[in-house]
Length: 97
Image (cartoon, rainbow, N blue to C red; front, side, top):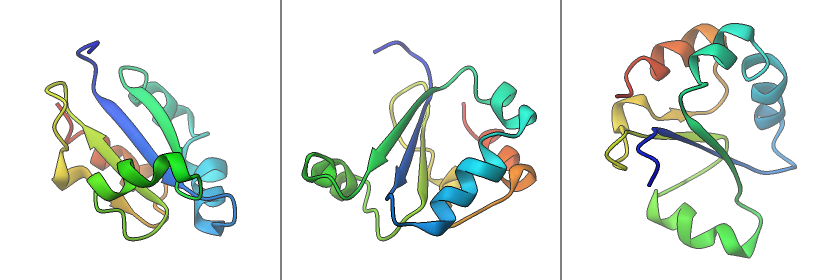
């Protein structure tokens, strides 16, 4: 609705690579600056309320980061599955309109 791109971070509390993303990638100052224009949402796949969203985006495992462009459509080429460091994450962010 806002016309902003969106980052959906599908995670689980038990997921070690998810915690690594939180500690090493999402705290990087370059990543923080590059994602300021996005609405950033975390989706806990262990919650029943998240099942429909996980199914809609065909989430096979966590962590999975889905980027939605300003048109609300997934930018599939930017999708991240598994842990990536700040440099690789920034490359994916650049692909999103």
